[in-house]
Image 1 (cartoon, rainbow, N blue to C red):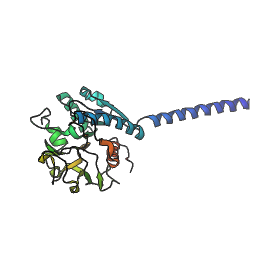
Image 2: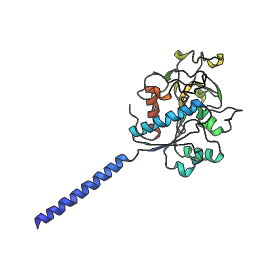
Image 3: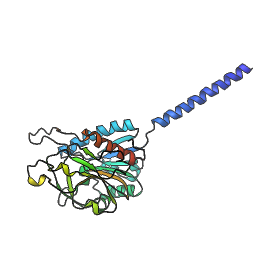
Image 4: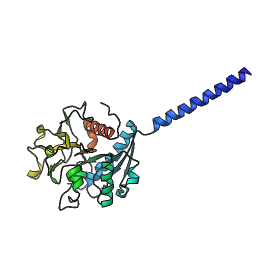
Length: 282
């Protein structure tokens, strides 16, 4: 009789152990948070190259850091129901254009959603295919206003970490070398905006920056923020995201890669983990 009781108890303990193990495994395999990237990837070969590179890189980083990464070129998915599944939204190259998409994104951000944008996602120039016709996004959210000019060709720069107290920059070196990029200059001086926290800028040792051939495409002085956040929202913007391409010979081959700087890559990873509410590793 006692032997039968012991067998029953042992069976129950085995079942309980299996259930606990299964629950722990399921918990470990659940992503810490979910990221959705929107992109267009049309017309400009450099932006297409970056998007292709980014989608592969982010998928690898997601697997290594235990979050989920999805990407879509369907901007109509920028709606409340779809966004409710994600903690972080990424704009890889452009921005939403319809009122419904824009309203959904603004509501998402005002309700505590996370956002990361790259390079062309902040572009606005009137007249152009991307005019400045969204004041909340360009003037309030990003704080940069319209695009003014850029360097050319895409070149590496020495980047100064302006704020080493922010969660994404803690432990970062004071200076690091970026991957090659086409750098943007903006209408508004972000230093004058009380809501903007500039994290990184181009260090003066980078000048002259750019190779031309046009003189205005080479910067010799000035102050140029390249990574910043708006303290009223959970967001971060990176000016990086334009690969060098072989336009001259018509091959459109990629000549440089955005994710070729170890320190810059870590800064992006730290930012994603911060936006997702997960502790960044330093």
